[in-house]
Picture (cartoon, helix red, strand yellow):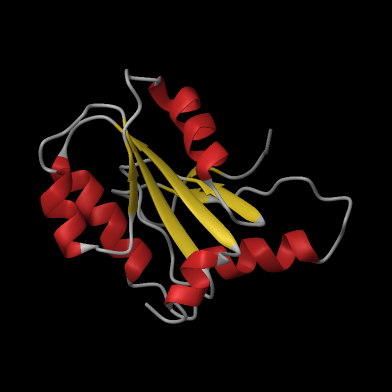
Length: 143
């Protein structure tokens, strides 16, 4: 991943926090989309393993850069986001569902928008439908 050096993990600009319960395949696809991004910059990826999944070690072998957090119980999506956010060391946090894939320039565009105006407290990308790529599932709103 471009820019993913030891220094960038120590001082990340963005933490991508992904609460995860079950389904190794969707998590793998999600991580593939993250690590195929172009010109990402300083990014850390945090998986909150809500399901205490026995396959996390094999996922970590494929994606050694990820941080895996294991809460004592299933915190759900919102609780997993909060748990991961507390572990973040980044200036910005992107909360991501484990069944999503992200566009190659998504993170950079969100950061650029956030940095363009100090009044902006949060941003959300447009979400395209997985089966019908030209249709929006959700076209905005944040908070």
